[in-house]
Length: 317
Image (cartoon, rainbow, N blue to C red; front, side, top):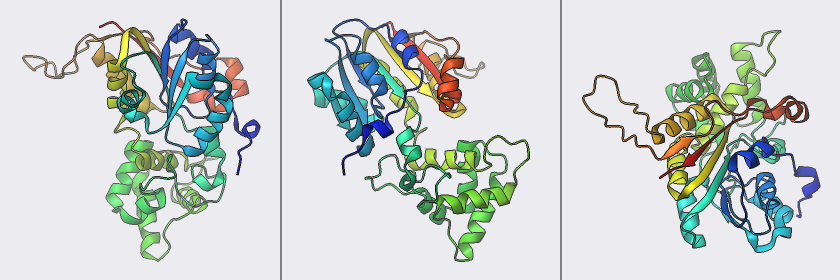
């Protein structure tokens, strides 16, 4: 069934800031490694009639919308149904050796959050899926909760969700499982977490928010591939090329920040080691000593931008 793009297109987070930090010139080639609905790609393509983009996304539904949105740019946009970690393979397929810039927006898109059947949000009662590539054979969030040990569930919720009461949540999930009541829907999980850890009167967010984040990260292996993606992106840049990465939680931001620092030549070895073994070498210049965040106008228009942080670097070697 055709998708109505007017109902799904949203304003991309920090779009103007991305354009500014990339310092767009005519006749450049960029990679939008998380194409989504095509907002950042459109802003870049509109800068010059000679600009080209290789777009990557693992969500087939998002690609369908992006193709409709960007079709006016013709063959200046080529789209690949892949994970952003496959960026080098995409360039090989496209016959491109080096590019002038890379942009990655690591947030879950409005399309995914607002699609009840995808299971990303507890605003809808839906199967607990959370796969960004709904066509993949990866385990769903429900399958993880059905198969992992109590210890592993607690670890995921604690490490990926930074939830201090992870053990209590994991214990209740496993207890329910043993009673023949596995957690299979978003409402079941949200209700379970709220009962397990309570909800304060002053809490602005639902108590299950961190648990949902943790499971989404685990299902999609988001953190495991992020450092390699940053390094691969720098590797495919031309000298003088720029990489811009937008993160939405502290775990992502920390990985990007530390990888940038390492690529900028900062040694991360323990101070007592006689010589550096971390492999730090100065390949980039960090352009954002502090991350760029949304201004008041964007925050008022798009509340989801409140946690967005943009970091950028320039390849010097």
